[in-house]
Length: 293
Image: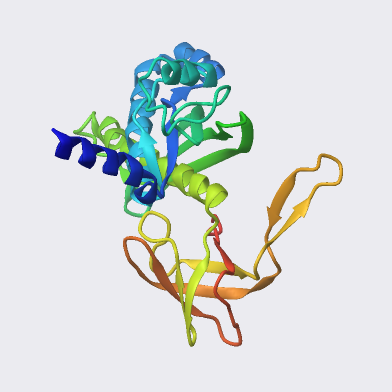
């Protein structure tokens, strides 16, 4: 019995040494009120519900893959006050909870609201026959909170657009519906990955952790970078104080050049510097978005 007590005390005492990841509450993804009303008029409520459900699953997976957070497994939080009530009731370990008046059990919280979904279809005639050109657009508002203060750290509108061209098969009436079923998870997964990348970028800006000649290693891996991604490098950022509010903010340094990702691991990526570019450990990195055609 004494041995069990000693072991338990050791684990409780040592827990902070291992709990290096920040805790994150992930609110259940939902559709905005205006979107819900619009899709109801067009009889697309079922389709929208599937999109939101798919996004909800993918965002948990994407954030977990970032390996930056311990996710608090309560997606149905309604408000920061709800989170407090759970903490006070003992559902959350008080040893790891914030102080009274703060959200319990999670340092940060992300709330994602799908606010736009549109599918456009147009017929076009090509040399090989008539085809359908279909455009998918989806966007969501992602808001990141510091739950210890209730401060909004970031509010971004994240968008994904996909264009799909398919042949028209006169003998198959369900061709279009089948393609929608195939593409919908891909679109929501990309939106979830972009949302997760924004979350990580806000709380943990990507940085160079090693320089070996013209090869740099970055503390981001799968789920953030892909091979051949082009990235922009910035000199070390600095912290400044807003003279009006007294708020501290970190700003990027000057642009020092670009690099191209050559390999991606689970937790890091390597890139080759462009000619005549030098970089140092600690410099920030930002992925360049591809130019839309």
